[in-house]
Length: 268
Image (tube, rainbow, N blue to C red; front, side, top):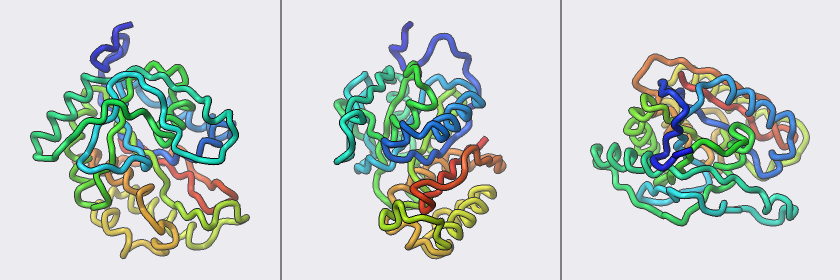
């Protein structure tokens, strides 16, 4: 199989949706129910030619493209059982996709850099293990260039043409992420309130509200004391912004006993 350019030769190109997935920690790999939900979601979508991954766990300015060949994963977590450090996901690289991304960003005056040895981090590979377990779809990871909402939406808009080339633009993070409340039983009211607000704003694809979440959303400071896990949804929303809202939520519910929303989003 020739994936030299990041294109799977057996797939026909179709317009792809844009997605944002709650990605969990490496322990998601042992959560059979959540893994099954992710797998079912992938089966319901067109098979992508390649995947452009934007994970909450890589923030680097300017926007930086990771390895365009198969390199070791980034085990960016500590204190977990040894088996999680043996996870492999040898997805093909996507040099052709990287060239297209450089061109699209360059046309919009958005600086871009390369980090050819940077592998997929757990925000990238954990959901992919569930969704594309054969690791046969070329994957390119791209960094978040900081936490400026307008810049993140602009980045997504610049990438939108990739959808017509069979590329799945994939944001990976969490809509609520407050580690102080991990494993405390019950869903706090602030988490429910923020999740409901996000559901409404995403359903309407209200970019102004999504960008201004810190002042418009209830309990935003509790839901996201730091907001790198929210940033990928702004890139995803930007990539879907130039069409009528067509938002679904393939996965919802709660994790870590209730403070972390599993809400995942599909645009288109």
